[in-house]
Amino acid sequence: NAGVTQTPKFQVLKTGQSMTLQCAQDMNHEYMSWYRQDPGMGLRLIHYSVGAGITDQGEVPNGYNVSRSTTEDFPLRLLSAAPSQTSVYFCASSPDRAQETQYFGPGTRLLVL
Amino acid sequence: GESVGLHLPTLSVQEGDNSIINCAYSNSASDYFIWYKQESGKGPQFIIDIRSNMDKRQGQRVTVLLNKTVKHLSLQIAATQPGDSAVYFCAENTGGTSYGKLTFGQGTILTVHP
Image (cartoon, rainbow over all chains, first blue to last red; front, side, top):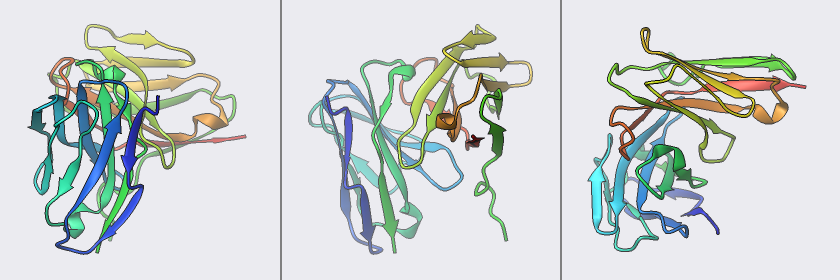
């Protein structure tokens, strides 16, 4: 199993550009999440999904969209990038509602100029 | 000037010492807590968890203590090794074990000197 994979590893955007951060897991996990991590801060939840076709907002959802058309994939879309979205983005998945079984991907580092 | 949140608490220890990392949580309704380890360039990794009906839980070389009276959580690492060097986060859950309800602390940098 590859676990949780994220692409790209690093991306530079100009203000106003859009892009999609990819997340995939091959563990058949129902639950998936997107977090952002800013310097000196813990992770903050952007959006999450409890199964294919079901998504919900987290703590900081503004400026981001998600969809969950398959169990494996949970892409995060930046509609119009802003410098405030410069961050490291982590995707995570879990087989059940238990938080202790949450696996994190390696992260995508995003710089918005 | 300095910005709040840019400077993480740090802890430096010698190899073989015991380490204690502290965390103050915010919500008295939180009933589930997790400690994560994050190495440079990697995602967080689960270390140990504790539910609010417990005050202590032990794992391999790690112990978590919970003091609900003062809303304080600590992680004790025995016989700290250079491989333990990382940022350690506590996280609290206000929704029981419901997914998507974790709130993370800012983290503590642990540096272990050989």
